Length: 113
Image (cartoon, rainbow, N blue to C red; front, side):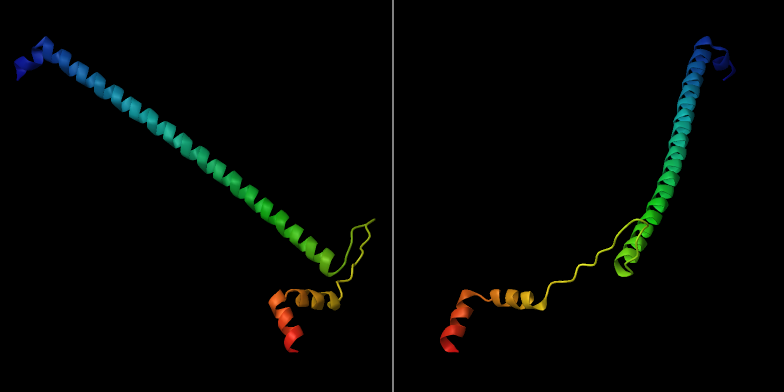
């Protein structure tokens, strides 16, 4: 065993194996650093998107409340006019219901009534 450690070929092989092991470890460490950087970047992007989402939800809620205030309570902004248009009369709805009958049903009504 002692002779093996004094052999220059064994020392060379041991040195090469040690260098390969060291290079492999350093590459693995660099990959870990890169992965950690990507994770931190993703977490930061997630936080930014969550903040944007909250802002957009607040804006949407404000728009919905403004829509209700304007339509239901007929409130207005300064310099704005609100005009309420009446709905369609009920007679038009009855005519539409009559027009929905098929031609066969119309002929039955004419012939048998």
